[in-house]
Amino acid sequence: MQAARGWFVTGTDTGVGKTLVSLGLMRKLQQQGYLVAGMKPVASGCAQTSDGLRNDDALRLQRQSSLELDYARINPWAFAPPIAPHLAAAQAGVRIDTDLIEVAFSDIAARVDYTLVEGIGGWLVPLNEQELLADLAARLQLPVILVVGIRLGCLNHALLTVDSIQRRAVHLAGWVANHLHPADAAAEAAVAALGARIPAPLLGAVPWLPAFDVNVLANSLRLPDPGVADRFT
Image (cartoon, rainbow, N blue to C red; front, side, top):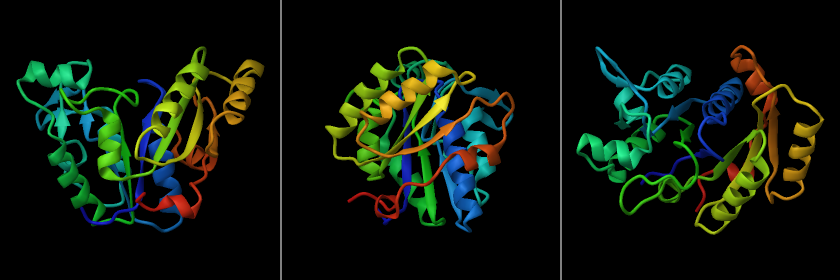
């Protein structure tokens, strides 16, 4: 696989803000003059359109990308049922082939400076009978950025995810605290508790946003240090 730069964006769960953080990081890179692309290799809960199955998160990544990219490259595996991807694939009578994902990633990465790859669900979501999402991150050899949705239960979910990441052949480049509700003292205490326990830098605390604003997202984040920005080898 051709050398690439970028990050694999995972989360403590579904609905914690992986797409928002990916879009914010893409915008931040673009502000610095880089060509950037976003990719969501596997998506469930897709809508049937005249162009085929389409996922809202993947479409947002496609629109934010610096180049006009074919949807099938950004989202090689799309499924209609809003269920775990390996189950959705089984219902569709197919098996998620990570070889196809690697080909799509290599094609995109060869055309831009940085590629943001967004996962699906949490870190250990099954993709097929043998591979988890974590295995895909290792296969693409990208440093990982963990998005933590700040809410009740996030401490346990975040620390379990960090422990699993550390046990695999990937590098945790940093983590992001995404406020799912207006911040209060308890939320700030949770962020501080995680900061004291996660052995990776906090890349930003995304405020609760009643309306989407990619520039606010970008300004809430910082990129990982240059030493871990490149592909992890």
